[in-house]
Structures are given as structure tokens and as C-alpha cells.
Image (cartoon, rainbow, N blue to C red; front, side, top):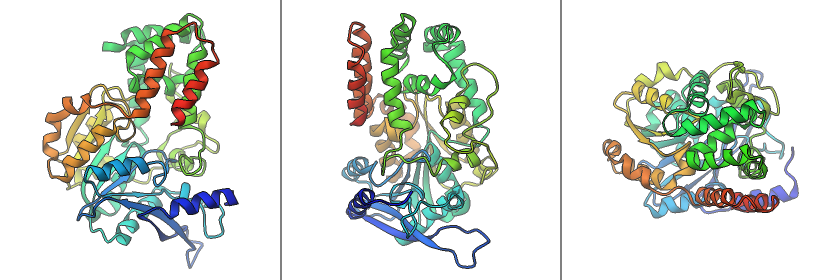
Amino acid sequence: MTMNAKRRRAHDKLAALPGVRPVRRPLTTGREFDVYPEFDVYYVRTGRKSAHPLLVIPGGPGAASVGLYRAWRRRAAVAGLDVIMVEHRGVGLSRHDDTGADLPPEALTVQAVVDDLAAVLDDAKVESAIVYGASYGTYLAAGLGVSHPARVHAMVLDSPLLSGADIDEVRAQTRRVLWDGTGDSTGVAAKVRRLVGAGVITDRDVPLIGDMYGVAGPEVLSRQLDLLLAGHDWLWSAVGFGARNLLERKTPYQHEPDLVERIAYRELNYGAEPDGGPLDPAVALREMATGDAEFVAEPYDLVSAMPGFSWPTAVLSGGRDLTTPPAIARRVAALIPDAVLVDLPTAGHSMLDTREHAALQVCRAVAAGEMAELPSRTAQLDALPANLTVRLLVNAIKVAARAEAVVPDVVPRAVRQVTAS
């Protein structure tokens, strides 16, 4: 894809925002080149400058930074935080080479992205930063620690990835919660088993069920399943449409996974081989791939590297997270010397995206040198409200679930309006 006039206008508008700068970076470090072509990787800095700014790395791969998190950075600046965010190569402002063409596949690797982060800190004249990674961003944050350890002042790993073998724990926790049932999910699991047996729910629905459990909680998910058991599938379809709109649809300068999905599948094993068991999240992830979904190799051995991390680290975990389950966060916290584990029992995946108030409180504490106090504040952090968009979507689901007589076409329109906000 080349940059058309409409995209060029959007590009120029975002590139002109206050604090946005390009950094020249090698397109590829392939051995076939004596002189490596370069292109622009963009980044943005917001807030009063400090000695150790907050380098925030969102999830994905595919999430943009400059446009998508503009409001988040504004609120972070109000909270007194100095924030740097880098537009991931192959996404948004950093998608194209100097001719306006999409970056080639060989330019898109974890190592290249990690080196971009270090180059941005160089350009910003930052010796070391507080590195906050969310979901996939935690792998990049840890990679920065492996490849450029002197650039890390402190680290926050929000809903962490550890390795390509994480799928084993993801499957185990998904089945523990949604198939066998445990604690508050016992009733949910019984309904899921009935719906799977009837062919109403398939493996492709696992990410949606997991997200709803994490974000909305078991009570709202149970209402949804009751409607399905009663033969009312219109709300489920509407919510599925909204989720796909948010998570899968390519949206320029917001969410552009098409080029960078090769990182997820080739280097991080997002499309693991299905194991034949019930509710396998790997099935849906493989179906989402637009190219080759086969795993090749990981760029880092974080299990071996993390015991050598020497900076203060906080590990955030949602008790209802089925994407990167709490067991992975606990293992990460055990691997990193003196890491503190901050568990939010009623939260789902990625505090950066679903529990913004809690994420900002954590960032402020780390910036103030108060990381050690965070475990004692978990109840207070967990009680903070979810993001506005999340609250609106959950409330819309609750209202619609009570109104079984609503004309089916009404709810899809409502969900589209909420998710578009």
C-alpha cells in the first residue's frame, strides 16, 4: 500500500501535533545491504520534562501511539507525568518508507522495534526512562532491558508476556475458568459447556468470551449466555461486531495490524498449533492471521534474562485476565529480583487500556520512588473506575440484556456508537 492523498493529509496533521518528532532509522539490517536505507520512526513527548520520563509501549502489535493515546497522554500530563510514546514501525506514522510505500516484511522484527526505542531516547536526550509496557508492549520493554539495559531506570510490566510457551497457561486458565468453572465462574462454565455442546459457541468465540469476562465480569457474561441459551443471539452478535471493530478492524493511525502481525506469529507464537481440546484460543488467533501464522523463533529468552534485571520493577496483573493470565505475571515477578506484584482481582487485560485511573496511579507512584508501596494499595487501585468507553459498553450490555424485547437491529447500532467513541 502506498500513501494516498487522504492518508497523507492525516499523516501530516498528526505529524504536526505538539511534541511529535521523526527519527531516522535503518529500514533493515539485512546482510544484503552495505548501506541501509532509512525511514522515519515517529514519537511524541507530552508533559513537563523530567530526568526519567515514562516510556509507554502499548499492546498489539498493531496499536498506534501518537493518535490512539492522545487523550491518555493529556491526562497523564495533568497528573504530572512526562510521557514518551513511539509509533511502532509498520504502524501509523511509522508505516511507510520515504517513497510512501509500506515497509517491507524484513523491516519488521522485535529487535528492530526495540532498537527504535533506544534511538528515540537518544534523540530525546534521555539517559534512562521508566519503561511501561502493556501486553505485547511488555515483551518490547523487557527486550529493551536485554538489549539496552542502561536505558532502563525502572519498569512496569502490565499484563506481561513471557514467552511463546505462554499459550499453555492461557489454555489452562481459559479452561479452568470457562469450562471447568472456579469461584465466581462456576455458573458461567456450566452455561458455556451447554452452548458448546449445542454448537452455538465455538473456539472462534473464545477471545470474545474471555474479554467480556475480564472487562464486564462474570455476572454480565452470565446474562449474555442466558440470552444465548434462550435462543436470543442478536446481542451476542452485536457485541461480537463491536469487539471485532475494536480489536481486528484496521483503522488508519489507530489500529493497523496487517503489516506487523508477522511479528506476533513468527516471533511470539500467537498462532500456536491447536491442541484439540475445548475452548482453544489458538484457533481464533490462527483464523485472524492474514498471512503465514507459523512460529519461527523468539528473539529473546526472557526466562534466562529476567533474573539479571537490576532495576525496580512492578508487575501488574488482572485477576480476570484470560489473555495473559495471572500465573504468567506471578512467574515474571518471581524471575525479576525484588519485583513487586500488583494484583487487581476484578480487572481484566491491560490496565493501560481498561483501567486507566489505576495505571496512572501506578505510574505516579513509580515516578515518585514509591513502587514498594503498591502491593499494599491493591484494593484501592482495584476499586478505581474502569475507562469511560469500557463503562459505557458494559452499561449498554446490561441494559440490552434486560430488554429481551428490544428490536434486534437496535442494539448493533448502539454498540457501534459506543465502540466508535
